[in-house]
Amino acid sequence: MMKLQLLRNATQILKINNKTILIDPMLAPKETYEAFQQTNNSLRNPLVDLPVNRDELALLIAQTDAVLLTHLHLDHWDTTAQQLLPKEITLFCQEVDAERIRENGFTNVQPIADELSWNNIRFSRTDGQHGVGETGKRMGIVSGFVIKHEQESVYIAGDTIWCEEVEMALDKYKPERIVLNGGAARFVMGEPIVMTIDDVLKVCSYAPEAMVYVVHLEAVNHGTESREEIRQAIEKYDLTLRCVVPDDGEYLF
Image 1 (cartoon, helix red, strand yellow):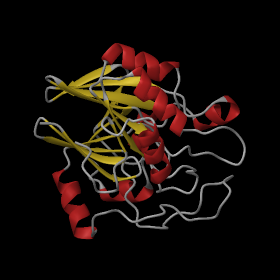
Image 2 (cartoon, one colour):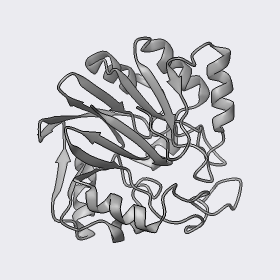
Image 3 (tube, helix red, strand yellow):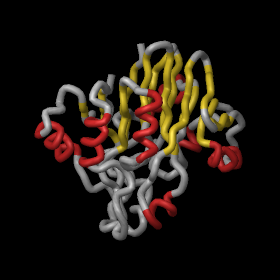
Image 4 (cartoon, one colour):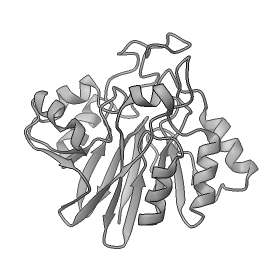
């Protein structure tokens, strides 16, 4: 059976077909990095520690078969992860990021333009919008991925707002499980660059048969919506049976 555990922010561990895939690893201890620029506070990132200690993290890395990166922003692919992960590890990414990853010494980089099959696991790349207007352009190209083995699938939407690209992915793949990056992260100027509460509700409405999980919360300084606020909205709209906001370290399924 497919299993998915949230570590922190967008960092997750997917176990599928007896393989372990580490998604968007941000592995630094609490307060390692400065606050993101052009935000309304000076809190250092990440805001919280990982829910595993150093020995547990080392064991996790030793057991990891591959890494999946949706894009290369610090809170998805940090310096600590680049230092800790073996340079020969299988690493899946969007095409635009492949050369930068290789420049950091990784030797088994496998970019996904559209679809890729690995150990009977199918990865299908999806598009998204990491914000709108000038902010969206500055944030660059991002990807989501639908990951499927036999009859089980999960859609890792990545850093995107609700947009036509997400709608198209839901129409095409009809995933049974959807993982959204929430928290309404934003800068002093511009609109949110990931899902807001309203965006989460739109996904729930558009894909009424799917289970929805909201991550990317309470770990970086430009987030503006808390777990509690999202949970309250989910309860208000009677979505608690199919929309879940996991805590760090919790299994989504």
